[in-house]
Length: 353
Image (cartoon, rainbow, N blue to C red; front, side, top):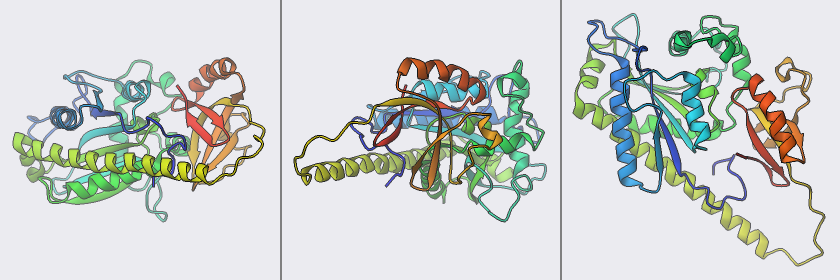
C-alpha cells in the first residue's frame, strides 16, 4: 500500500499527470558527437507520444505537458506547472550523455542522496546531476530564484538533500515500475534506479521521477533514438508503467476506504469525543531521519513533526486560521520553494491548495 496517501481518500484517484520534456529552445541539452541530434528533440518526441497514449487510454486523466513545442522553460516553472495543477505524478524525460562513447542504457532517478549508503553523494553520478541542473545558468537572476544555488558547487547540494520529497515511497515505486517496463526495449542496458538531487524533482510536491532514456553519445542508443518507431516503443513502455502505477495507486485508495468502512462499522455508538481543531501550516520537507529542531536547515523556525511510516513530515507556520497560515506561507515559500500548504487534522497532514 502507498504509505503517504490521505486516510480520507474520496475522489483522490490519480487524475493529473505532468510530463516534462527535458530542455528546449536555447537549451539543447546533450548533443550527439556529429552535432546533428539534440536531447531536446528526442525528449519532446517521446513525451508527446506518451501524452497521447495516456489521453487515449484514460480520457478521465488530465495530461499536462511542460512544453509541447521547442521552447525554453525554466526548471522552477516546470515544477510550478505540476504544483499548480495539483498533479498526482510528475515524469521528467531526458537523454544521457558522456565524454566516452561506451556508456549506454537507461536509468531512473528520484530525489535524494545516493542509493548506496557507502557511496559519497558527490563521488558518483554527480556529473549528470550537475549537467541537468546547469540549465539554471541560462535563466535570468537564477541565484536569487534558487536561493544562491550554484550547480557547480557541491556544497549547494547539501541543503537540497534535506528537502526529501514527501512522496519518496511513491516515487520509488514508480521508478521501480518504469525500470522494469523498459527492460527488453530499444534501449538495452539497465543502469538501475538512483537517488540524486535534481532541482526539477526537488521543487515538485508529488511523486516524481526523472528518466534518462539512453546515451546520445553512444552509437547504438543514438541509432535507436533516431528511429520514430523505436521512440514510440519507448513511449509505449513508459505508458505501460504509468498504467500499472495508476492501478496500484487507485487500488490503494480503495483498500484504505474499505478499511475505514470496516473500522467504522465495528465501532460502538458512544458519546462523541472532543474534536481537535483543524489547523493549517506549510510542509517544508520530509525525511526518513529525525532532524533536531535546532538544525540550521529550519532557518530558526520551530517545526511540528508528523510521523508517517518511515518518514517524518516537518511543518511550520501553523495556525488555526487558514488566512494566517496562508500569509505565513507567502514568506515561507521564499525560503523553501518546494514547500506546500497542508491541513492538519487528527488523521494527519494532507496537502491543501
